[in-house]
Image 1 (tube, each protein chain N blue to C red):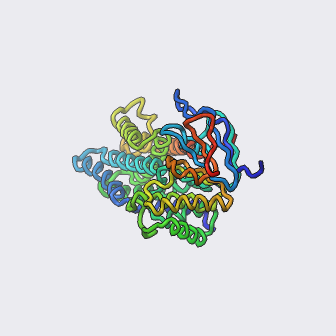
Image 2 (image 1 turned 90 degrees about the vertical axis):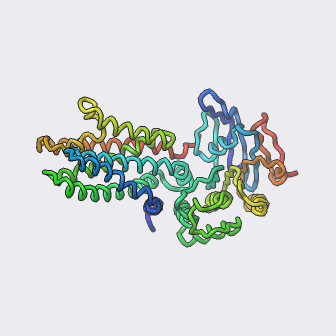
Image 3 (image 1 turned 135 degrees about the horizontal axis):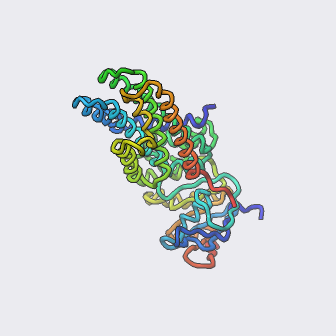
Length: 207
Length: 220
């Protein structure tokens, strides 16, 4: 049981009269990749935000170990700052020295095929490039638990394929990875599938 | 090592400095407000200009906080303390507001030759500080910029339109009264206290509401 990195159990979340999550849960171990699937409005993003502690559940328990990297579905960035400035900002949050933060940021952006000048302002970037920066910021602090909410939106085909390969790499490095996805063709790549549209939770993924 | 709020403040200042149209409007709108009243020979031109300054500063505070709300929560998740984020946001706002106050003090003192220029300077600085508090509280209460802007228009509109009983409970009451030439000089201290108290109260309320919005939920 010691290798559990994230456990959310019996999570209930209501918005007014609408119940979005009714007893949902997931358990992710270190070195495990989990896909969170379900139809639109099933509560995938809500559950991920609860796991990130950005949102409170009405009831349920959440246990988390280690540093968390969270990549929201919509890029949460400053329009009038460049990629390099974002990296500086988030590296400082993680307590990384500026030079190390910069080097790590450049390394991640390069791995994601970031083509733009890091000094270019976010509002001048394409949607896919913004999303690469959005994902890079989640990875910057070398997190133990990665919570990724459809992080590949707008990626070109090559980067999209590379992303799923990276999920495997992160898992092999011992991280716990949760990916919200609608890409059912990629589910063979993960260890466990948590389907919020059906109860009880389905368990699937790699053989 | 650099304090973390300083990095946030530096980035916030850079972002603000790249909003050239906003910066132009920050100067242009209160100038238009003041200039139109002064050119008509109205004796409340200084008060009118101050309302323009207050409205612009309140609006910039509103847009700064609401524009960063999704990123701020993420910054806290990434490792910043909410206090770092708050101070990092507030510092460039305060510097901008005080710079604007200094500029408009010069403009209005030279333009209107008030009997008590030091009191006018004090009133404009208090307007700037109170307006930040108003913008921050409104930003903490509304979901989007549109609702916040409407609320700020309402605050300024009520401030101007309803003198009397309600007026004295409005945030910019004291700074405006300070510029009233018929006011007894002895009231300066009380009015300063009123404005300072208002600014502190608004800042405390905004900080509490804002902290609730961006803090990480405690584990169950």
